[in-house]
Length: 156
Image (cartoon, rainbow, N blue to C red; front, side, top):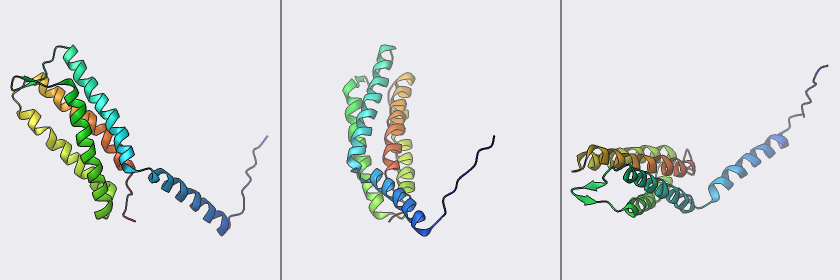
């Protein structure tokens, strides 16, 4: 028993229809406002960073810098503020760069690396520093890909 392959004749109309479907899918995925994607990613990241901090507190890791306790909700608040800044950066690179997605990822990865410098130099225990760095990395791992996925590879 053999399986026969049936191939439809290729015409310019068929190719054009396939291209239209692909363009429609791409534009539909990008038609959602960037701020909405940022808001969703920000909320997920805020919850995730708060959970990381709460787990650290439950494991008796002091989340103190300079003798001051960091409020648990402070993790969520700072994550949401930084996500809003990320959305503004994404809008700027989409408007003013030739390669928005690449520029956004490069800038945000560099900013994430810079964001851990204060954690490394903080007056805190090593465990506290590691938790603070982990929260930065967790938030970045959620927000950066979500926003980058919404940016075109090349400016249109």
